[in-house]
Length: 163
Ligand SMILES: [Cu+2]
Figure 1 (cartoon, rainbow, N blue to C red):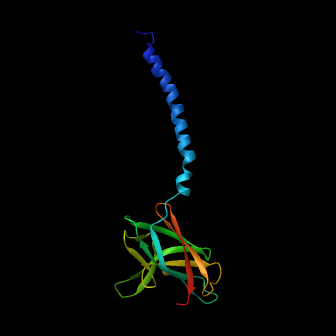
Figure 2: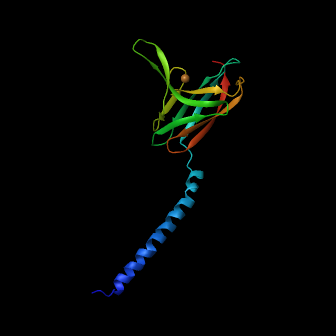
């Protein structure tokens, strides 16, 4: 019984070969990983009325509004916004407390419901552009890039308008 059988020899050979095969498979998967990112499906979102609020010279921040319509069957979860106009941009919500005072607070996500709309405006959820890189000119178009939890993004062109 001490003599190795052909079956055991075959198993030993398989044990040596399998890790190498698995390693090769992992390498192949890692090498092809960026492909789905570059060919990501476009988000099922339509932006309406994208606006950056005009501010006077010297102002360091402003807000941005738009309505997003989701024509897809799944909610779209926004996780951030960026724009060349501002060094910082964030998702915010406006809440009214028990005393009737309103206050803004940053939120990690805003959700566009499946088949529904998310309205970003002065009285509720909105985008905040902080630490402005320059003063926006009334009438100019500014890109706003919204990113989503699933790693996709949507760039919309917002018009600078007086409040
Ligand atoms: Cu705000």
